[in-house]
Image (cartoon, rainbow, N blue to C red; front, top):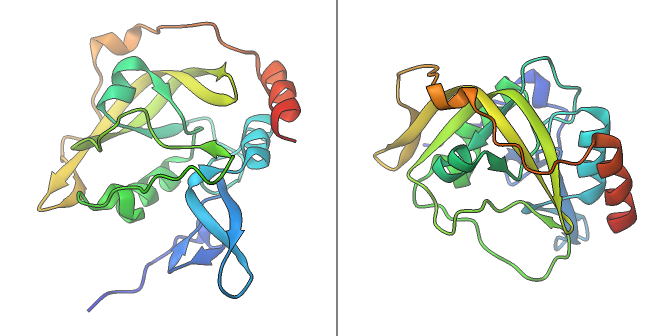
Amino acid sequence: MAHPLTVPDSLKHLTVQKGYPVPYFVAYPTKDEQGQPAADFRYADPLKLVNSIRGDKCFVCGKPLAKDRYLIAGPEGLKNRIHTDMPMHEACARFSLTTCPHLVYERADRRTSNEVATQQIEGQALQKPGEFYLVRLFNYGFILDGGAVYINFQPSAVERWHYVDGRLVADGQGWQRRPDFLQWMRPAMVPRNHLIAKLKRLYL
């Protein structure tokens, strides 16, 4: 018997669709059978992307970020320090790791679509990785490649999550630091105010 999803108080303001709270960043590009806006979890709303960057807001709950910021990365993202999602609260990241079907279930794959001309949030890896990392950020900056926004980040520590019997779980090792985290590969990054201005011209 399925148990009802327990949503933390910090996320109860979010719209619920199909039993799941819809993260702040998600676009509503189409309508459902009742004519109501339908969330597409594969895409970020450009206006919300701008608001997240300009207002220093969590990508999941939409509320102001705290001093410590986090993201969820696969092995390749952790290696190249490039990520498509914006930072989030630790609680929001942990809720995503334990709730988002695409992350939680090993055999769940995100569908692809060419129908919606909004910022796609699909990761860089062509295949779903067998592990993910909860990343505590030490520093980060923004990169604009055409109309796509990325963050280049320097980790402070990571917590590894992997699949056991088809379900994503923490590996039990807690927070880990590595010597290479002291190095930050810094490509040409865009100042926040310049990035916001460019995104407005592109999307708004």
